[in-house]
Length: 389
Ligand SMILES: NC(=O)c1ccc[n+]([C@@H]2O[C@H](COP(=O)([O-])OP(=O)(O)OC[C@H]3O[C@@H](n4cnc5c(N)ncnc54)[C@H](O)[C@@H]3O)[C@@H](O)[C@H]2O)c1
Ligand SMILES: O=C(O)[C@H]1O[C@H](OP(=O)(O)OP(=O)(O)OC[C@H]2O[C@@H](n3ccc(=O)[nH]c3=O)[C@H](O)[C@@H]2O)[C@H](O)[C@@H](O)[C@@H]1O
Image 1 (cartoon, rainbow, N blue to C red):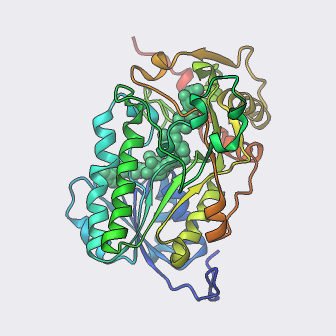
Image 2: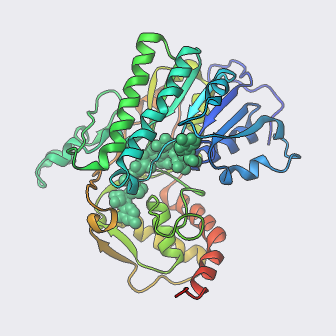
Image 3: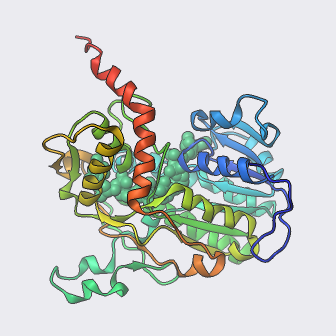
């Protein structure tokens, strides 16, 4: 519900309506951020993307209460001179645009590097030259592997948080060799972080860098063959959802032993909302945004999703719910993996008072309810269709 009373920031100051240039607004995170800003604030969004399917419900019909506060601009930031004008007439730019699916990092490394570094350069430049604030989306992948992963398997130091907790201001960034092209994404994101940081230090750019740790929820990526390419490989939530919808075993890459912490998109969007409305507390900072309490191995995630999906769909799970596949078979040559990702939450907690709330079970329940409601019938029809010979 839009509020009419004056809203205040964390320091009690009234929040002025902002114009926000949101690049990549049509993606997973962008769609949730637009929803939040339309429903709960008076800010205006200039939504920039090449697609708008995930925000169509916010753009039409014209009678929506926020219709005059959101405009969609279909443009590719690689080659469109309108970008600078949009940044100039905004108070703040939020840059979400990126190639960010691991299946692309080793198979399309050039596109990955261009998207995450080269294409972001003009955005940083226009913000810096025009004295505009920038919130840039980086990734937890900039941490790479943990220090602990290089210790012997039986080393007691592996249990010491100093060897695996990821801290914005002290943890190193540890990537594999150049042949392991998986790291093309993390490396490009790291370099754009360094550039933004340097623009802040040398030219006074007001910036905030966000490092998301596996944000998941409705509208993440696509279901292959339904609203994305049949041969496409999305991120793990959509891969496993696709397997569950099709009653196929979930594929565990290299045994599913890697660990991740998952945070509910709606919790994470609260953190971004706080950054937008509290510039004095957010500028100049890099923030981990994740849920350290929701750690699982990928195998445990598969088991939990199988149970939750059986509950929400009312269908028993299949006899062999998971199978092992090698990373070479699944992702191709040059894949590598982050072993473990637990965010340190000290900085975001101190600056913005933010803490995630939703447990992994609860977030999977609401997300898989959405997946079932949105896709089950379409998948059933696609399976029933006779295959052309
Ligand atoms: N979802 C996560 O958990 C997560 C984790 C770490 C980092 N991130 C980062 O957050 C950002 C958003 O992620 P997401 O999950 O919403 O991804 P997404 O792929 O759903 O959204 C990215 C959007 O950017 C758009 N885009 C890409 N290139 C563009 C271009 N040249 N011009 C215009 N639009 C372009 C895409 O069309 C897409 O709609 C990315 O920078 C990603 O690296 C996300
Ligand atoms: O979300 C994040 O915070 C960041 O991490 C992701 O990287 P990753 O977590 O490795 O990507 P997922 O596709 O979500 O895979 C998670 C794990 O599941 C495994 N996996 C994936 C898919 C599958 O079908 N089976 C499977 O075992 C992968 O090998 C990996 O170990 C992506 O790089 C980005 O979206 C983002 O920057």
